[in-house]
Length: 352
Image (cartoon, rainbow, N blue to C red):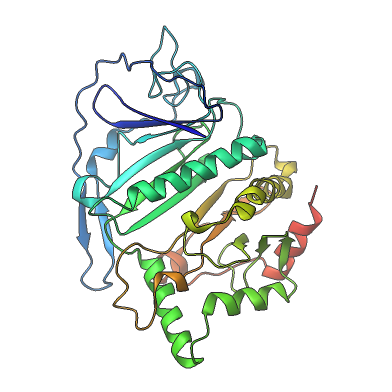
């Protein structure tokens, strides 16, 4: 992998990740851009104890442009875009419309390929490995920013999810706090460690799942399963078999195997609802240990956390979506219409 860092016309950082070491990236950003102006603010909810990002400048972000106006495609002489080069492998750049900025954190866009017409599942294993390397590098770099306590790499795919740009891409959020979801997990880790005489909750959950009926894919270094208490109709958790706290700690064997495993899972998600004629909408989310001090969670340290990816779709059956209605949105109590065991069986059935 070759990494080349440059700046866009408004000062935002852009990084090329290339498969070839002899690739030269020198194209300038020819756009007459004004400096980015953000109004990002973090407000803490005194009742729930969680944080909300207020970012009114995002109302003006690009919204469903036609394919020939996509800002994530490579630049042409007639139309400069966010990526100055005429082609690229993987690109990461600071979001022009970030949810988090300055002391409130940082948001980046990850373009998986310059080909507008494909999705992540269409990448080669070599291309998918390059994306993994980019996620890992950005996690390392963002962890050094003074305000950052947690790094979250994710992909939203599909208009049903709320994606506003059709180009294959994901995002990275660098939060200035430990997210509520992670805080709940850390509290569960601490409680389990105390009540079991030091056992690790992730290890015990993974052992239980590997022995059960919900395993979807069992590779040499990774295992994918539908969790016992899945929130979503089709939800898969992908774990390295050797517990590590973050992407940086993955060994080469796990890195090498990941692309094939992950691409197969994404293809199975598309096969679930192939009759619909449209790609399955999904969210793919990497869960990593925070870089913040974990003093608030008795006896828990970063190495107790288990890196994993959670992949789920809001499509519950052909032509029907799972909406977050009263119980889910109002009380955070999920109601799942698809038994996890049935979801796992279906995901095994659609194997290539």
